Image (cartoon, rainbow, N blue to C red):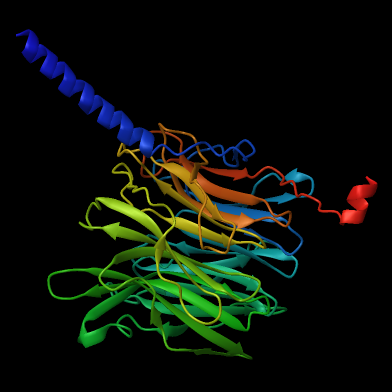
Length: 436
């Protein structure tokens, strides 16, 4: 009996030790260089947000608020951080239908915002407005199905926007593009860049989801990534594809599209950014089967600095999963600065159905990545859907949504957190150091 009890206790201790060891192995340290998190919204039920920066360093954050009961108006809200700090949020639009997936960018002297209006996955419309004329929004595209979330970027020649959508209820999303010229008065008629099955081999059906865009400073080079779905008989395949375009006047000419994710990998939710030298950097989420509930997920990275594409690599070797409370794949965001590349994403390490906001950076152009840190530090909440950028001072700023109640599907508030001001070493000439 004593021996049996000892065996049971030993087995329990080993199991507990293994569990604790696994959890410790995947516990990300707190972000030591971050200022306190700042809550921008205070009324809950804010479901989507976007963030961008103006040429003078002003930060803009936009978000949409749902209706808690279905009877209240939905809001589109914008706030900005100027030299004097964060300003009082302003309401840009108030309607009785859903406002989803807002994107924001700065052009000329004002913020521009684009969003989906209506019930996504059903017939919705893509709309846009400028913050200095919020009462006269432009309807860019109507009768859109799937999830036509806009991605928008500002360049010297104007605003560039892409989105993936279907014009019928069938899962046959195309890649669309529209342009707002600098000094212009509205968005151009959308054009189809890539059709749903254009890059799919063998006559199989396909569909494009989630597109992201980056340009050079002039806006003459346009770089786009998207999530390509392929539907062979009896299964689904997800891939990441990329295309480069050259804009001359009113014409955007595309090169041959290229698959970025490895053959046979389930890949989703890409993002893209350029460095000052024109190097292209792409991230995406790698899914380990089954797709319905992946056993593990990783953030993968690939770059092209001018001659060839690097081998796809995982920026963090520790596996992660997404929550079952708000079904989703892990979504990541990418920022490329003068000296660093940073990636933010949401994930759970121990399958506890709560997700933290994580961050890792590279200081050597993406060759190696630093230890991942926990930005949100809210283990009992869900922290989701990050945006990330480098401020004009070279600090990292992250925007995300954090759960406000146990209504995990809808009730969130909008947060930002910024890196503490960086200290740079001053290297003096030898003669000056000797005099000192």
